[in-house]
Image (cartoon, rainbow, N blue to C red; front, side, top):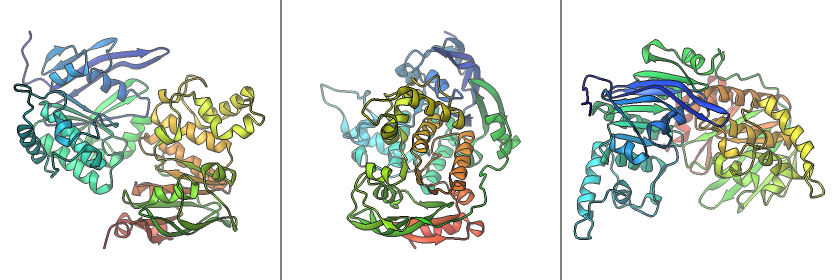
Length: 500
């Protein structure tokens, strides 16, 4: 067996090829990673990042290519084998058992037993040491189902460290975190780097990349575009590498022409979530609702959409009170909601993209109970072109699309419904900068067509870049409104979002 070469890169992947039926997902891709380095892996949705990571993690076998660890060629045949090679993968969807404690999750599958008894006390001590190493305070005996997202992520990192991981891959680790939690995460990443780990960090949030990365590797359409030190890149050049073109203004906001109030919400309440919330949204306006995670933003729009039952409050559309007890009544009243979690709430992943498109439009495509497949297909095809949806065909399963294209399918079905009040809940979460730009253009088009657009977002640059007016929520209430967005700052928003 070839010995390890301590002077060689911690990880080298060379000429990796992986094809699926009709698609070459990776076409001779490579990267290198050094100990004590954070390598940012960037690219649009569908660029090949996830496929490359699954090859490294043993979830997929490459068709060709070489993987070396410390100069020695290895064959990674399974996720367990990857762990044995010192590779830890933290995917967006955590692999935790909610009913088990943090300690039990950390050591699940590797518990040493003695005469049939598990040394829980020693596991507890080791878990505490791992959390101390990460600079956090979590009770190892707390059930994971009771931990928040940031804490669950730390448990995942501790799991990898418990297996002596030297290479740690973090796939969109900040997607569901608040700004404060992101700061804590980046501190942990920096600490692990100082301990000699090599970290591959995947994120669509470029601000994080500039804060934490040493080098950047960019993939596009399954190919390797380039690898460059961070100091050689600007935000604009990084985006151009990813999308293959210059986008210009990252937030292409158009001047708003405001019309009449389309939606008015009065004294909306739901116990424990929403407390006396009132606001308006006007024709031609992009109204942003922001605040920290748990502030009540999503809960508010779910009440407007009838997804949850309100305790009290009134909803008016074009000055008339409407009865909305469920999403079907909301749709008939001209309201649509693009949910925060498109995979579990916005799409049926086991159905085709066209079937998903037709779900809220059954009255149009199946007025007598029988689907007019040709009419539905023509309508869907027009949105495939209009929104540049990358799909192998209308029969492709929604679960097989990238995150950005899944979001576009959700948009297509609601655009077909021709809603007058369009609510976007975290519309760009987990999608690449090119897809974000297309979402922003679509929001502009909807506003220009006289729709009232409501955007919930945790990304403050997005809020400041796209909104005509900003509502800030805290503790289930509206804590402030910013009408002069051009003069607003992130600090002003945060001061309204946090407890004084």
